[in-house]
Amino acid sequence: MAAQFGRRLRKGATTTAVAAVAVAALSASGAPGAPLVGGSGDPQSTGTTPPPDDGAATGNSPYYTDLPPLNTPDKPGTSTNLPVTGSAESGIPASILAAYKKAEQTIAGSDAACRLPWQLLAAIGKVESGQARGGRVDANGTTFSPILGPVLDGRGFALIKDTDNGAYDGDATHDRAVGPMQFIPSTWATWGQDGNGDGRKDPNNIYDAALAAGRYLCAGSRDLSIATDLDRAVLSYNHSDAYLRTVRSWFDYYKRGTHEIPDGTGVIPPGLGGGTDPSPHPSTPGASPSPTPTPPPGGKPKPQKPGGGTPTGPAPKPTPPTPPPSQTLAGVENAGTGTLTATAGDAFAERIRVRARNSLGGPLARVSVTFTIAGDTDAAFDGGKNAVTLLTAADGTVTAPVLKAGEKTGKFMVRAVATGRSLPPVTYGATVTARRADAIARSDDKALTAAPGAEFADTVEVKATYKDAVADGVAVTATMITDAAEPAENDKGPYFKDADGKTVRTLTNLRTGPDGTLKLPKIYADDTAGTYKLRLTTEGGATIVIELKVEAPPAPEASQTPEASQTPEPPAA
Image (cartoon, rainbow, N blue to C red; front, side, top):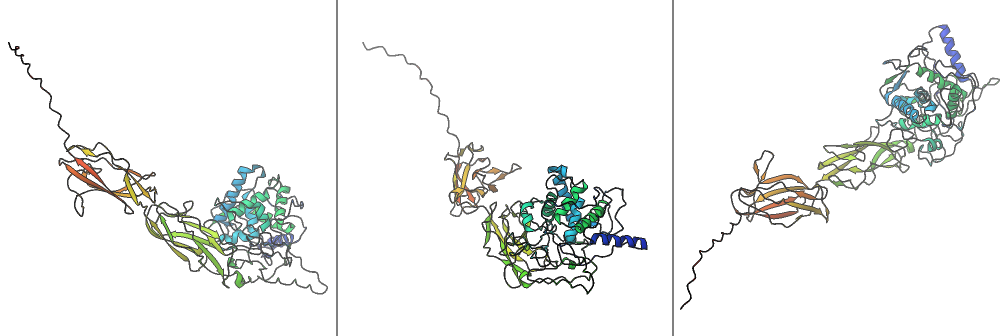
């Protein structure tokens, strides 16, 4: 994380004795190799620096060195339950605090022996990024703009050549620490996690980054309730005694108590420039680092901050560098999205795609873009979401998830905006059309007859298709019509019954099932005999006319009466 140019004197030092304590603490934290600052919470520091287990997660990038205020949020030995209110310094933005606690719970379920406390993540998050710039994150926990460390090009900082082709840090020549927990890309490639369950591992997302940091700290067989293991874990993050002391001071501070504050209202460490600069570090791509000051003749050089060329003594607050035009977001634009049309219940074949451009008109990577569905519709992105936030790729483009139409037909809008920026959105119109059928036919050819005043014994069943495929969910209207040149609803003959048992001769809002079939309700006959017509029409224009007959049943044949037996005439003589 960016180095703070000098430390501020902690509040609360109102007496000479307290001031002396403050000066002693500052001196201890700024002297590499000095004994570690003991904390009041467990585990206690051992006072010695154990060797690191592996390379530093941050590439030993600079970090914020301000210390907690002396007026701690709680008293030693009292409850660690979170107070409702407290000092601004003790507050942690809601999404950031939730991410730390979720990471603790997740790791407790998979690596309980590690005993990771969320307060350790909070301490590292404070030192690395000022709790994601005071909680400047969107609803998904992603920072509004990437938090990037200085270019690790060996000029004042470590030399780490590019390992991710600029995918995470936008630099294809050298690496930079990325995100609220400041992972270098090569470490993220190994330890990156999906902490919020969105299917992505994003170092700029606090849920992903916090879980990754927790797993990194728990590497091997570490038990963080043991002081030496905790010290070793912190040093593996940034191998510096001063770093360990600073993290431990915040760890102890948060263990004494803290409270939740709204996102975006957290205290930003000095030197961040208000959090508006997407690269608040002393170095930016294309910028030359400030030369190391030459010590006065006969004097001793001031101690340097581990991993960087920044003096640890008091210094004026630096002016944040202005990003070059190639890294300044000028806007987002349509990247070739075609017409958005889909049938109800189907996915839109076209995907929404936008491009972020810089002030030179070129592509800009790692820009956060939010896609939002607006209007009277039940359409949604894949997963049922009506808003998603994604980052642009190296070519400056980002494609929204698959958009799926609901059952509600009509038009709606999709907007794409650069998250957290006052730039014009890109707006797309989308249309959902009704399910259609171009053919409808009876499922059988039985004659449909009924006696006057009776009901038809056979049920009418039809099947709808569209381009020879099953047409499910298609709206169908059934009407008893007259036999005229321009048919109209008949006022006599067969009829249906509504829910109240009343006679109706037109039914609407009928729909075919998953197999494209539709069975009509029972049909009744009135007392008027004759031949009638039933017309079925689908959305899409397919029509069928079915014949219905109302006729009296045939009369039974007359029974044969035996003829009276006749006495045969006697034979002629």
